[in-house]
Length: 345
Ligand SMILES: Cc1ncc(COP(=O)(O)O)c(C=O)c1O
Figure 1 (tube, helix red, strand yellow):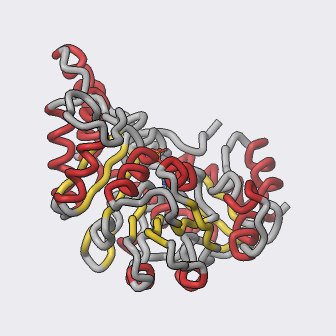
Figure 2: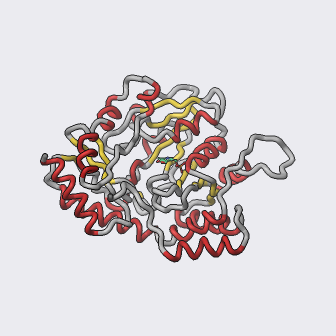
Figure 3: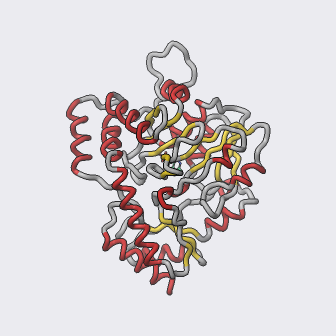
């Protein structure tokens, strides 16, 4: 079976983690501090606070921006549920925004239509690895949290994605651009990042202001650092695989992701189909290839809300095929052959 995602783990990753385990310094310590410095330098931001997951990063970023009870936060409906949960954990209300079919993120126009006096922030994912222009979202007049969970390494006009909003979040989940099993980060201006550091830990503080334990271990940070050192190679391989799919699938009955140069890191290679993705997924599965809907289920479906036509269309046509550095050239060919056969069937 060719899995839908698989991390690229090298012997150097194993050695770096083993060294931390042998040292006995397992919990948050010097590896986390070094990862924070390296991530901030890589993303060209003032500071980074490393936390336990992308979900924790979203929650702590919202809290650092003083989002809480009585506030609304604009989020896409066509995205994983992590955003919804993070907003709710802060005591705020998520307001779902329809999709932009060009970017697969949220529509700036629909976001504007859903603004109210209670809107306190907007979360903008660079969906599936495509870094988008933040200007139309900044123009909404509320703080923008850039969600870079799927877009580490992408660039917009020569600058790394993640530096254009009020704050940005990353994820180091096992399938992401760099994998630490779990993990995440909030990056941005030092004063806000300090607030995230304050709330990710509860121990030995004078006050009982809301805090949690959202720390990353030094074992995970060592793995994340080792992976971050290879991010450029990972992204180059993802782009090479995308170029191969583009060449093989150019004439097939499907829509390909935009050829967006350095903006796209192809966390997912999402194709638009003219038929039910479940059918193609099953046909690929029969050939030993795991494809997936890129979003399990849009938020509005879980909430029984109408008025999300673009997200509905995406959900009923989009399919993500395997695209990650650990794929061999032979596996890339097998996936392309399989999709061509399924589409021709
Ligand atoms: C766009 C986006 N944001 C946030 C998250 C949450 O990250 P984590 O799984 O590390 O909590 C994910 C995870 O899939 C994601 O895709």
